Length: 443
Image (cartoon, rainbow, N blue to C red; front, side):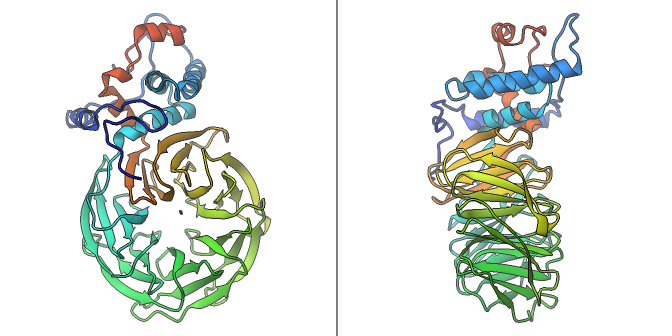
C-alpha cells in the first residue's frame, strides 16, 4: 500500500504559515479531554434566526469551499473558516477543510528507533502500529486515543525489510526480507510476538500480504513473479506456488478475504488472480489503463474496490466485485507528482502519497476535491489508515514516520485550544451574514 523532520514551530511547508507550538496545542487538547469536556457538533446561530438543516449544509459547504480557495495565501483565515464551517454543519466538505487546516497540528512520531521505518500498517483493532525497519527489525507500537505511540518492542531479524502486513483477523503478521522473502509472526499478544516461520523460495518481495485467517501468505517480486504459501502448519510451511505474470511488478495487494490478488506493473495494467485455491492460481481479469506505470494498489475494506496509483499523478478506483468486468468508478488527480502510495479506510476515504512528498486526502464525494494535507521533504514510501478512519500514518524515503489525526471532532478540540483558530465577529458578519454570530467553540 504503498524528510527530514520539520520543527513544530517552523513554517508550514508550502504555505509560509508559522505553526503554533504543538506542545501548547496538545496540552490544551489534553486539558479538554481530562476535564471531560466534549466538543459536540452544534448548530450555531442565536436570536430568532433558525436556518434549516439544508441551509446549514449549504452554508457550511460554501465556507469550506471558500477556505480551500484561501488556504494557500491566508492559511489562518482558512483555518477559521474551516472550524466555523464544521461547527455549522459537519458536511463532507467541512470535514475535509478541518483535516486540511488542523491535522498537521496533531503530528506525533514513534519514539526514536535504531532504523527508520520503510513501511507501516495498523492492526485491524486500530490499537497497534507495526513498522518494518531497514535494519530488519519489526517494531510494534501501542497507540493511545490521541494516536501517541509507545514502543511495545523491537524484534531484530538482521534481514533488511521493506514491507509489513497484518492478517485481517489481526492474529498474524508478515515481515518481508531480502535474504528470506518473509517471516510470519504470531501477534495475538503484540507485547509478546512469537516468530512462527521463515519462508523461502522467492527473491526480495516488493510487497507481502496475509489472507483472512493468516494461513495464506502472498509475496511478489519485481521480476514478475508472485508466490503463495500455505501456512496451516506455520512451523512447516508448504513449498510455495510460484506464478509468472509476464510483467515487471511494482506492487501487489490481496483482498481481505484472501481470494483475489492484484499485481501492478510498469505497463499500466493490473492483473487480477483468483487464489481461492493457492495451489492453482488463475488469472480472472485485467484492468487496462493508460500507458502509465501503476506504482501502488490497495483494496478497500470489503474487497470490492481497488485503488491504483499511477505515474501520471492519477488514482483510479475500480469496481472489482466482478473481476472479469472491472470498471472505473472514480478518478482522482494527485496533488503534485507520480503517486507512490495509496490507502483506503473502512468508509471509502482515500489518502494519497506522491514522489514529491505531498500527502493528499479524498473524503469520498467530489472527485476534484483531493485536499493537500502534508508537504514532506522526500517521497512518500508508504501510507496506512486505521480501520475507523481516525488515524493516518506514513513514511518517507528520508526516514520520517508520522502519525496524524483525521478525526474532525478531535481536530475541533485541537482547534479550540488555539485562540487564533476562532473566527472573529467581523469575519463572521462578512462570511456568514445569514446567521447570528456565535463563538464556534462555545456550546
